[in-house]
Image: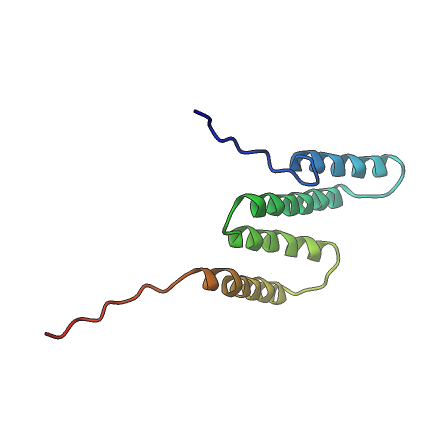
Length: 123
């Protein structure tokens, strides 16, 4: 009896952790050779890379990716603001709310069927 095995989820032929390490090693090399990248910016890059690679993995292994996409938006929006996009807290909240609602309509609504209420029979 054979047991099905699942292959590792790869991104461009490599493990997501390998890509994360490669990107962070590249950032470290840039810093070592004189490009000014602050520790805070390095942390933001790490968070962005992890969010994007995490989403790629989730999309490849799950049917319902809505929670993962919303999590990436929730992670990505503060990162984009930290890198210089000027949004007020109210605007950020509106973007998060609109994205959750829009994604819910796009991904959830077409995949669900309302429960039918039986009509009582008249005898």
